[in-house]
Image 1 (cartoon, helix red, strand yellow):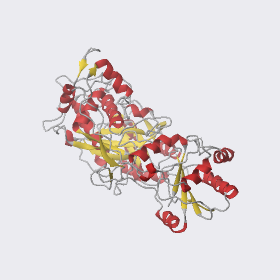
Image 2 (spheres, one colour):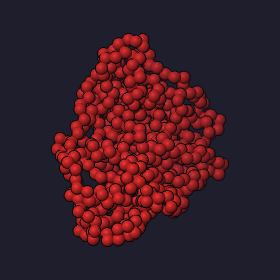
Image 3 (tube, one colour):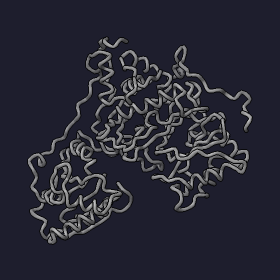
Image 4 (tube, helix red, strand yellow):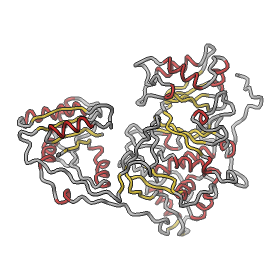
Length: 129
Length: 423
């Protein structure tokens, strides 16, 4: 095959966008990394996906309860402590509640989300990465 | 409820991809990177300073994220559907294609075989499955859109890697795992792939001397094909969704080898996992490093392996020992470990709490017999077993499709008397 030869039959190596996001590990499999059959697991599918609207914003944070949630990445707790300190110094009218998510990084914490929904007005989550 | 997610600036592109993909606008705030392993003074400086992405004061940005009214764009998030990709690339010269494949990130940067329709058709003779059969979906992340691939797409990547039709069933089995060879993580995952069963000998997969070194055609091209599939099906984009900080040298061919079943005194790995001895399989291991080379002593190998295990540090509680067959034979014949399970159980009992990442569960310790019986050695890795996939499904009914004159690299010297003088 010479360098200047023209070809019209070279195939695209990329897969096709599936419209399906994320993967779920097989809960029955004790080994990590094994995913459920993608056609059988719960998925977010572009064919049924709609734009996700953010919640309406608050008029101000005065007198509001803001949850500062650290999600387990190294340094996140210290970062959020400094953020809480900033609020205390600069916006003392804001009531800060500091929390850590339970379990390992990436672990869901439904109990905390329920608490925030019941008692909070807004949340700052981090620090990712 | 208003939420402000905080993500370090290093991951701004990463989360921007998510925002677009999911039609889910979020008001991120980006402190500088890193947040971990830095001084309190530096963290305080981040809080008092600016977001390096927007150049706005960081904390005021958080306040604004919770209080500023939604913009029109935020009120009308658009779902972006990626267009279906055409089967053929646009007509071009060989020279330009070579550049295109490298510059588009479709390869590992080394020369490839261009996947012309003829070459792909030839590769497809390596299986009876139709070209349009869907094999699976993959993403190097846990959350992004997965790319679907057919038998033909797998064949395209197999051609690019330099494989022959005889290798195709193994490559299809790797694709069927739906597990990318190099999942995205700042920690830089590595991979080990171990083949068991008759196909090892049919296509000359190296299980013996130098099995993990580049001295075998099958080991090289199949391992490489797995990486190319992770680029092109897993959609790995360095700096965007692929976040390995160091990278991992195993990503080049994924430590691809066969288990030396013939010289192992124990049952093969795939039989441990519930497959029949006459089935061919591919087993996957994920981790980071080869930690330690050890050697047996006249007093025994098991104790040395337990010491090595207790000296390991790893982020995942588990690991895999790679054993030269001589080591495995010593463990059985001299130290009385009649099965892998016996030895695993004994090893798990030697774990010193708080000294080793291994939990006291035998299932998290894997034993794989590979090597050429040069010395009774073992290596310790922090790889953990993930899954075993059948290759047989992908082999043609008439058997593995060998070339008339299969390509073989120089074979390792085989110990003719079976003893090597050091057993």
